[in-house]
Amino acid sequence: MSIHNEQLLSNADQLIKDNKIEEAVSILEGIISADPTFGKAHNHLGFIYETKIKDYTKAETHYKIAYQTSPDYCAIYYNYAILLSNLKRFDELKALLTKAETVVGINRSTINNEWAIMFEAEGNLDKAIEHYKLVAASTFDNKTLEIAISSVERCNRKRSFLNGSNTTSINPNNFGTPPGT
Image (cartoon, rainbow, N blue to C red):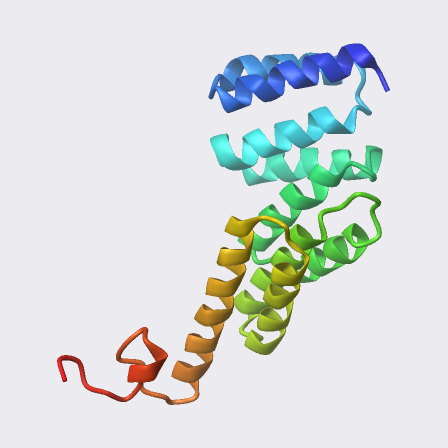
């Protein structure tokens, strides 16, 4: 690990937060030019290409290099999982999340959330609910807890709707009651 590269990465990270993308890319490319195996820089470039430039092919290229060169870097699992989920490449996502579960220091709540989103997208609402409950059980963050609870409620509403229940209101006590009564 190069302290110099870590400092440059920290600078690039701040530039990304400040939306100074060209400057961040320049620093990250400089790091990679000096050390092509510095996976954290590849992860950050993948994030930029995915979220700022919307070039998913380049994003994936950098995520794959980061994954290969820095398999213990937790952020790569979070970022690459979101890309695979957005691209609906669920078989690859399952493999990535399975590997992520073995990484020391990984945020289990975040990984369970990615599992839940994938299962919900696949229409497996029971598995999605199971994983959203794991998110709720493993988080210490109130916002994450509230999102997990609302996600379970959303899945339950979807399940009710798909099973033919009348969902005229978001209040479950009013299911089947016509609006305005």
